[in-house]
Image 1 (cartoon, rainbow, N blue to C red):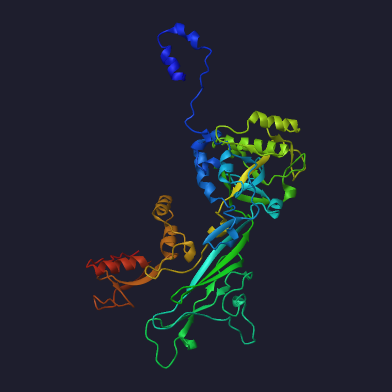
Image 2 (cartoon, rainbow, N blue to C red; image 1 turned 90 degrees about the horizontal axis):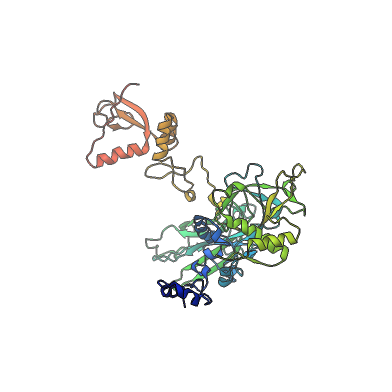
Amino acid sequence: MGLVEYLDVNEENDSNIALYENEIIPETTHVEIEPFTILGAVAGLIPYPHHNQSPRNTYQCAMGKQAIGVIGYNQLNRIDTLLYLMVYPQQPLVKTKTIELIGYDKLPAGQNATVAVMSYSGYDIEDALVLNKASLDRGFGRCQVMRKYATMVRKYANGTYDRLADPPVDAEGFIPEKFDILEADGICGVGERVNPGQVYINKQTPVNTSMDVGVGTPAGVSDGAFKAAPMSYKSPAPGYIDKVLLTTSENDQTLIKVLIRQTRRPELGDKFSSRHGQKGVCGIIVNQEDMPFTDQGVCPDIIMNPHGFPSRMTVGKMIELLAGKAGVLKGEFQYGTAFGGSKVEDMSQILIDNGFSYSGKDYVTSGITGEPLSAYIFFGPVYYQKLKHMVMDKMHARARGPRAVLTRQPTEGRSRDGGLRLGEMERDCLIGYGASMLLLERLMISSDAFEVHVCEECGLLGYSGWCQYCKSSKRIVKMTIPYAAKLLFQELQSMNILPKLILEDC
C-alpha cells in the first residue's frame, strides 16, 4: 500500500492506525530510473553539481564544449577546418556515472592539476591563475592546433587554367627563403617547418580568364599570361605541414588541402576552467623554485585565488578537491555523481588514515622566503580544462594599415588588419569627460582626415582652389574634414539635397 492510500484510509478513523504501523511503506516513488539522469550528457560531467550555485553549472555546460581534448580515435587521420587536440589528456580522478556511461573517460578533455587555493603575487586577481613553469615543461596544458588551408586549381571556360609553379631561383641559383619549403611540384613538403610569410602553395592564375585566347598560342603557355597567386602562411607562430591532400573532380578541377599543425604550450592570457564554471586566464608563469611546496615536496601546478569561492558558491569544486586527494591516496577513482557520490565524511576519513588533515589543508612552505606560510593551504587535485580561447588567436594591434575604398576609413576586423572602432557610446564618454581634442584625433585625424576646398560665397565644395558654382577662386578656403563627411555631402547632392557649409572666422 502506498503512502497516499495509507493516509486516505486513516483520514477519519484514528483507531485503525495501529493496524498499519508494522506495514512497510516506500519512502518515495522514483519517477526516474536514477535521479542523475535528469541531467544531460554535458551537465552530467560536473562532479557534485548539487553543491553548486545553479548558474555555475549552466556556465560549465557552455564551457565544457570549448575544452580541448581527444575528439576520436581517428583524430590524426582527419582533415578538419580547425581541430584542437590535447597532447597528454587524462581522465578525471573524480568521475560521475554519466562520465562512464557516455565514454568521456575514454576520450577525455582535461588534466588533473594539483591546485593550491591561495593568494600569490598579485598576478592572480580577478580569477587569473598562476601556472608552474615546470608543469608546462612536462606537458601540462599542451595542445595541438590543426588548421586546414585549401585552394582550387581551376580550368576556365576560355581554355586557360591555373597552374602550380616550381620555386623560383635567384641569380646565384638559390631558392629564396620565402619559397624554401616548396617541392618541385609547387606544393610544400609534408613535415616541413613553415614560418610566417612562407609560401606553401605556389599557385599562378591566368591574367585573361574571360576573353578567347588568340589562335596562334596554346592556352596559357606564355609566361606573361600568368600572375602569381601564392598561398602564404599568416599565423604569428611557426607550424608544420601535417598532411597534403589532392582531389581531382570530374571537370578537371583539382582541390589541394594542406593541414598545418602547431604545438602550443600555455602562455599568458590562455583560458582555463575547472568543471564548475570557474574560468580564468593565465596571469603569470612562475619557476618551480619560487612556488610554494608541501611537507611532501609537492608543488602545485596551478595556484587559484580564494576570492573565486565566496560569491560563486561552487562548493562542488571544494568537495572535488577533497575527493580527488582522497582518491590519489587510496589509489582509486572517486565519484561525484549528482545527488550522490562519495561522501565528504568518507573522504575526510581516508585523508586522516593517510596522515593528512581531514579538511584537505596542508602545511605549506614559501618557495621564495623558505619560511612556512602563515595559514594552512587548501591543496589537492582538481580536473582542469584548457579552453580553445588562446591569446595567440586573438591578439591584434595596428598603427597604420589598410583602409576601405569607399569611406577611406580603417578596415574592420582582425583578419583584415583592422582598427578598433571608437563607437557612439565611447564618443559620449569622451564628450562627458570634455576631451574634445581626443575626439578630433580619433574620429578624424587617425581615421579619414581629408583636405577640401570650400567656397565661402556659396558654401559648396570646390577643388584646386576653384568654385565651379561661382566660377571664381576668390573666397576659397582650405579645411580638413572626415572623408566620410565629404562623401555624405556628395551622396546628398546626388539625391537633389544641397548641403552648404557656413563658415565663420575663428
